[in-house]
Length: 374
Image 1 (tube, rainbow, N blue to C red):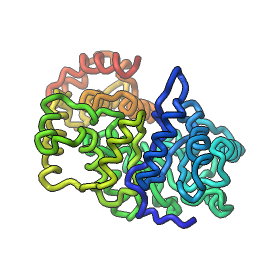
Image 2 (cartoon, one colour):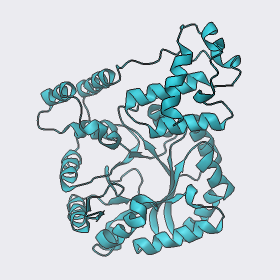
Image 3 (cartoon, one colour):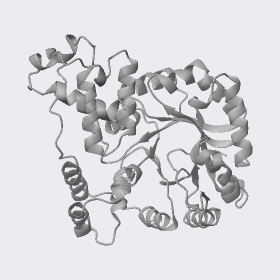
């Protein structure tokens, strides 16, 4: 089955946040959601080895594979670096995934969460790129790519080293476009400049962009009173060039209905609507921040070798974007490069003596440590 990566359904069904009933996946509701999705002409199902504790892949078998002909749908799943120790683990996991899903092959297969160091190093060490190419040659994988949570610099390196990559999945939404940790806009520009199809994850930022303050929601409602707040986030990414599919981890039938209403008769954003999103984003991100300009004068003389600007960058991101996982992961990466923790500050005052912004760095590091080192 040949698939044109540039002619995919705009809406992908992400099976990461499925509805639950009494602590288990509500298969009856999932079946209804799958039926509505398929009837709307959509067919891209995204799962992973670790979603729902391994139950998500089994749902693919029950809700999709057993109920629809094989040529009516496409399935994407992912190989997790953190579940592997040896090269033998690649086949062990892959074969288990085929069994769970009830499939002979995967339409799309991804290395899960490629990033600087950590996972990225594991995939290289275990030769996962060549392994995936072999699986593709065997007909067990139709298209090969990866999901990405690293820096733009590392993305360029991976793409240069692995021209076999056919598509890349990134976190992308209007709030994270200039996020200094996620750097979505930069990742998008790299992929789009190379003509690599993009799969979007977190288009509504885990639901954050589905419900805003009354003031911000009223700005959207004035322009499109019958459209949901989430639809603005979906239309933002759907209007970008090079986007192959937009994943939504829909948790109930109402979310499915709302997304289908957005994508079955998709309307790209107008210039005026884009300007409104820019305005809303500016208001959302207009919160007090640590006024560090990252001159790094404070770093050179720090006896504990603390990368103070990066500590403040993590804290500012937590405040601006109301999330903790990515900033804390970024901070852990800084520590992994050999820098000291915020908690290592000995209050010598060297940093404050050279700070052009006259920041109270000692107290700021103490506050940062309470959030980042706990």
